[in-house]
Length: 245
Image 1 (cartoon, rainbow, N blue to C red):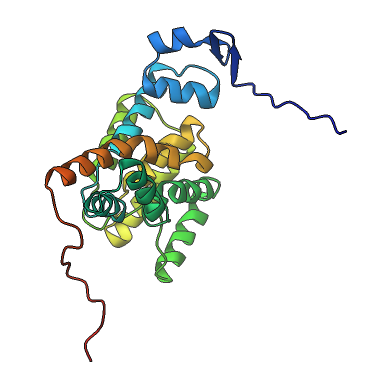
Image 2: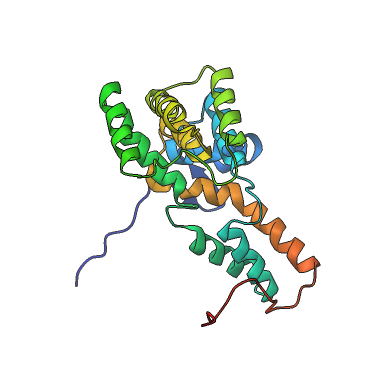
């Protein structure tokens, strides 16, 4: 009979009445770590510096709300109208919004910046010009409502105040300058937050973690607000099921 190989983790240890994470007792983590410190610690295996902690905090908090017209928030509202519980509402909104043009935008922007960061400035400028000529979108730049995304501006200000920079922030700012001069387009939250996350050492593969932690409280608030309005299901919407001939 084949011997089963036990699973091991270098992240966590569980003993009788005792828990450890990366060699630190859980009691110390509970007493002393902020939420963003805990996230950084779990992923990187070390406690962040004050600057790293503040920047991660800012990126998470910056994703808290974007209004109620986004497809993900609309999914939560519709779930509330159907009297689905919040778990199903949350699953629905993350499934609906996970694509590249909504909640997947952070990961997509991080991948864009990874490509831009390894290009020489002249190559980067040529690449952007060619993509604009082909009417191709540069992920992480421009916004459907804001001419200048206020969240991106604040994140860049905090990074500057902290004296924090890196190859991805530098690349993002250079791309912004080109797009601003050519098309009047500015950086949005995903390029600003994505550049900071990359320079903090975060992998784009887990970019949705920031979306989940940042936006879930907003979805809970929107869900409770909608329930409190006591709306009936199947309300009339300005949507046509059948086109008139």
